Amino acid sequence: MTIKTLEIAGIGAALAALRLPYGKKPRSIIGFNSESNDKNYIVSYSSATISDEDMTLLKTLIKRGDEHAKVIRGIIAYAEIKAPIYFFCEEETYRAGHERLSSESTMHGVAKGLAGDELVKVKGELPMGTELTKVDMFSYQCLRNIVKQRHNHRLPEWHVFVEWIKTLPFAKELIFSGIEELYE
Image (cartoon, rainbow, N blue to C red; front, side, top):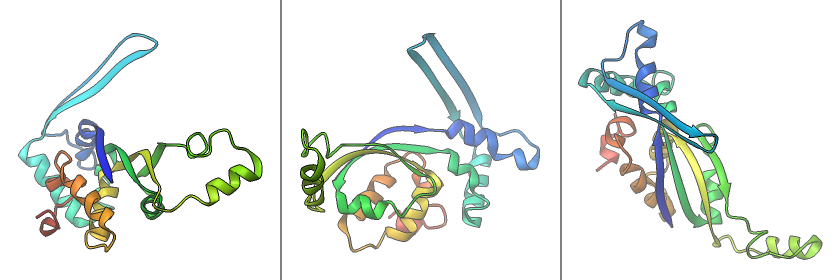
């Protein structure tokens, strides 16, 4: 199993939303930028320096539960995952905050050129251990739930997945807050 981080997005937007319930502006320094020079090219990004006060508030809200930490739903990790079919079947448990963007096609791969009953037969006989590559997106809130529920799972792929989560920006502070013992 391999996992490659493709992109992290939404940290600036999450910080902009953080203090809205209090009627206050973020304490962090956030910059939003967007550039385009034609219809096929756009760059949009944010930059952020997270203040100690905002990080403290984030950790406090995260420890209070999902309903208080809703702002981390806006921080998104995009990943390319190569794993066996059986892992992806289990991963489907996490629907809230997880979306499949695309998947390697068995129909255009191992079953290329087949149709009808022959196609159904080949697809139906694929071993569960067949590895596929998929691109998924996960909110940090979803990743936090995965860590809490799968860190001790007997399936080794979940341990690889949790180790990948640890490599994400601010994982210790925003995903493992209140469950730091699982970060070790």
